[in-house]
Length: 531
Image (cartoon, rainbow, N blue to C red):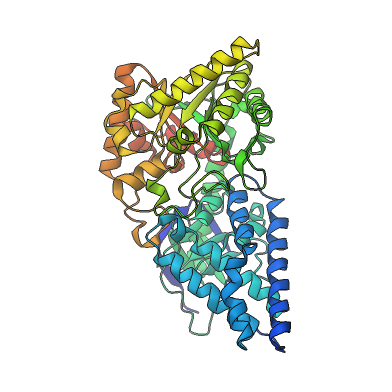
């Protein structure tokens, strides 16, 4: 096959070379079809088997991956999902055709929804559809082995999570989005990924080898020997640079002109810290507490939350730890807490709005945080703040819970209370908030500023933190922090995008927070910045 060069959008950085594994749509190929009763039983068994598969996978992952998989299990356990399929089976349609037709209709509805949350979940439904079809036909779901370059229209979360990415490999997709669930997972695991390559047509001759450049967003299929040689040379240089960066991971981050930049960690669960040396960071800039409220756990009590917060503070060994209060809603629904069927949850009751509306849940978290604060340098951050009254209301509750604990003689401290700046209104008037600190959430700030969803490929180019409008809001927030004498950090995905490091530091930012895997790469990028 002739060498083929394709250009898409970078979704996860890095270089990779390897044999191509093609992902194809699931096709049920059942050798025998029974009567409606047998077909209904077959579908029921396949759904249960698919749910068991995913439940087993949940035990092997952590953080945001758990949320994705638990959503899929909840969907499979919802009788309404298969209702249309069972109706079709009773009318004489084979189970596989009935299931595919019902799920395709559901997926189409999700993709056409005005609600971004539902659009983002279309890929999860496709994953569910294909896994059940595989069980109906008795075939294995797609698996990724070794250091394969996975090519296809898109890749499902469960297929991605079942692969061992520590052995190398990369992803090259015809469609997809840099902000999709799988893209976020790929960045967390260091798997290079390119999306939006366009139709992958092989004319009956699929490629055997591919080169993936997750930094530039390019893929070369069946490279000529000289092309491969040059790419391998680049990989050697990149690996050498990575080794240098890794060697300096525990050192301070300084720009070429001598500015000290604080590098903090983002974590989704305490397990993210397993095996990490606290010396690699200046603290923790974001602890997502949603993991405590996952559907399988229910609403956690005060003692359970306190134990987790203390565990994280103990790991930090005195370094500052910023814990974000529950950021439920939007693309993070929580059974029994968020509103089912909210027409537009990204513009609805989410983040601090939900916490203030459910004070009986919020106060439990605030008490646990006050108790944990005596064990380290704890800071508390409120998500999705838009107006000063929200900060004031939360501050009043925090003061009341602190006073009540103190009155009972329970060891506690009143942690400083800051806000996430992810709503343009907060960025434009940051100086109006009596916050102890500001932390810029670049994902939502970009999304709301550009009116472009994070998980929709068609508008992915607009969802760009490097857009001058977004950078201007970041700079304005930094200036407000300077005037008020409080710290400003950035904890969104943009902090780990080294293509943006120079632009972000140019806004005046001196604190960036990233996932643990991105620390070495970010420090190396900072060292090249010269004002």
